[in-house]
Image (tube, rainbow, N blue to C red; front, side):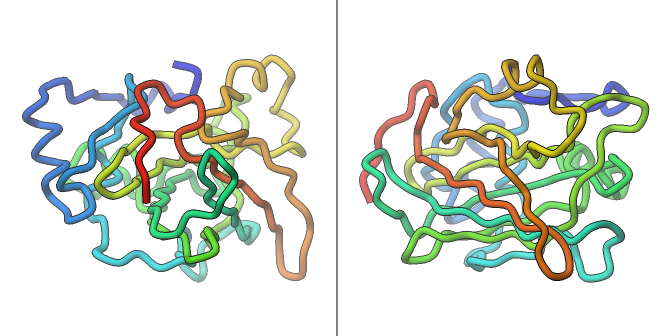
Length: 221
């Protein structure tokens, strides 16, 4: 798959049985009738585990006091015509500053162990805006894997799919070869240009619903 993979020391499992996926989808109001598209989709059931009933527009992806360089990741959710879309849930998870998915061994659920405790949901507001407050992730230990944040989109009752990871232009590991492999345009480009602001960094990752997602049903609000 073109998206950046988990490190070798974290096993990756895929649920292949339709019934298992259906049980996950039916576990939350947003997922009750939300099909997974854009297959193959690694870990697409995990964003539904623990999904709040009403995620905020601004979510804490990293809790207060998490070590690292503070990052405000924001963006606008747009439809194919460029119109803002509210009510879309964006799920994110990432490594800590040391490049590890922290707390991955603390849960009994294998998916949550892979994603770690730095995971959160934000819902786009009426203007299409969503925000995650977090820290800059680290590269996987002992690798040249670029820093990245995984993103998934949940359009309630319409579609659930992953989009291109957030990648940082100032990351020395973001080589042209990596860009060619990772920048597939799923949901628009995931490559962001972080800029220094008071107290840390800010970056913007806009999302175009359904762009380059195989099998996207072109749902209407």
